[in-house]
Image: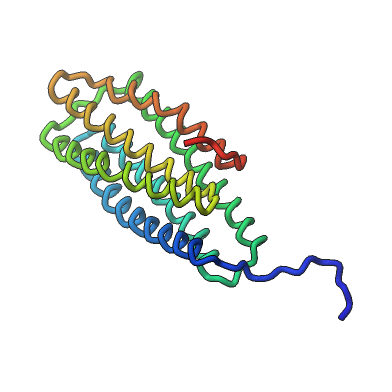
Length: 223
């Protein structure tokens, strides 16, 4: 047979451990997709009903995470299919990491706009009855998101997946935002500190920018 000069590519050989990690990553992604759909819808509906800027921002964050989880699902399904060669999987990994990284930048842009809008443009009067349900949403996210992120980070390290790590950063961001959400809604309700949520949300930006840059450039940032 004539030599075409092109490298021969064969389907990647899975070890049992890697196959199990890919299946676990997919399971975590399915959980994220379901969770973010419910959380995003509830936060947006309550935000609109209560005129809470914080709840609306939390709902938008859930939509960004939903996109990130969808990208990650595509990346993992390519590998889980078993027919893709190593080069193909690496190409998909890079694309997925970039897309998730850019979704983190989108989250930064929204947080910046949201905070500036809340500080300098309008002071919203929040419906405290509706916002009490927002505190419940924040509490659930505060408990669940760090656990989900922890599993994702461990699996990402074993798979050497920048895309999964970046997705885990989205979950960590959600956990932090849930604290901001609860404190902000409580402070607004009890003390009328309407500005607190906007100021606190700005503290997220350097962290999110760093993780977005790491995902896009392919850096292996430390946990």
